[in-house]
Amino acid sequence: MAKHDIVPDDVPTDDLADRVRNGLRDVEDPDLGGNVLDSGLVTAVSVDERVVRIDADLTGFDEPTAEDVTEAIRRRALATPGVERATVEGDAPDGAADDEIDGPAGVDTVIAVASAKGGVGKTTVSTQLARALAAEPDHDVGLFDADLYGPNVPELLDLEGPIAADAEGNAEPIDAGDLTAMSVGLIANDEPLAWRGAMAHEAVSELFEDTAWGELDTLVVDLPPGTGDIVLTALQSLPIDGAVLVSTPHPTSVADTSRSATLFEENGVPLLGTVVNMRGFTCDCGREHDLFPDTDVERELDKPVLCELPFDERVRDFDDGVPAEMIDLADAVRERLEDVDDFSVPDHALDLRGLPKPIRHEQATEEFRVTEPGEWFYLLNDHDPSPLAAELVAAVGRDGPPGDAFEEYEVRRRGPNEWVMAVSR
Image (tube, rainbow, N blue to C red; front, side, top):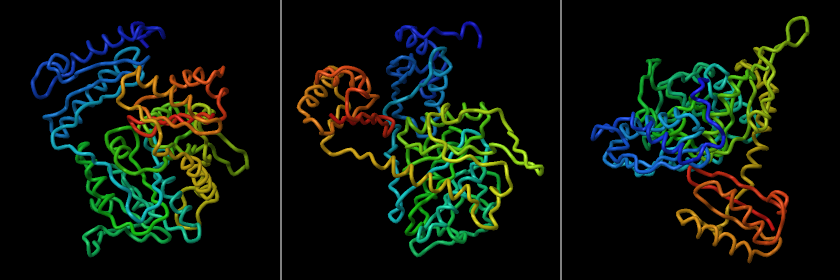
């Protein structure tokens, strides 16, 4: 890191906001010319510690242009020394609508499998997890290959097109033995795909919606690697109940996986845990060998390790029965799904979103005071409500941090602009 990039922890937020604004003068307004700050496209820049929020007026742009300028603004803000995270919020482009997709009517649970890097075994894990879940009696499973640029599921499961359509014109998934599968690789005829973000998102969402999945207990979605547009738009539009991250134990891979985890959490997708692939191998002499430097993955990611897979041909065997490690992974995924599902927000939750800060604090403390001992208090906010918890502690005459002062206390993020606080008195 260059000397001028070192920023003290106590940098005033006003100074950091000014540096971000100055940096944004390098981003061109594609409509009016000039930079996005002087043209009025960027309407506000705010900083909370090292997290930057940029408000932008994207009306008048088509969706591809809006995507491009949003990403340019975000990347320039992240390039400012001292900025750890940046989000761009604002009015939608003309013609844009809420494109959140409802889950297929017959599908109970959608599980995404993702990785920060390619080549770490994500598709192998996705496919074997689907096979392991399907091995449970009377458990119907589908596999959706959303990795547009590397659709390898057909090759792993030895599947071929063409795709047929049902009477309603929906694509019928391919029978893959114990499960059904759909992949863009079954449509593209092995031709190279070079789609831009908006086109790729449309392909993913339409294929997801227009597939006749039928009645499924679980649908496993194999996402593209990385944190690009396709992954982001998939997280914001597909009805994902929980996600599994795949990483090798190498420190670089784990660090990149941490950034992926942040993206999932920012978009309200529950992280079920991590699969550590290629942990090591056992040679013919019987000795075990590590392939990478040892890393405490669970501590680094602050998420449970669902399983550790060896560098072994058995893990990549799709011809015989499901490997025992994958059966264990399926069991761990089911247990974690029960944990994340055990958090529902009642209709009477106090919704503070959009209210001025003083009113938020006043309403939260007043309503918490009248909560009976033993009752649950739920609060919705458009940013992290954890700072309010200290005021709730004081409001009822308690001492110490919320985790000690209350019987139970939890804060969860459920979407880009939705946080939940749950407190039991």
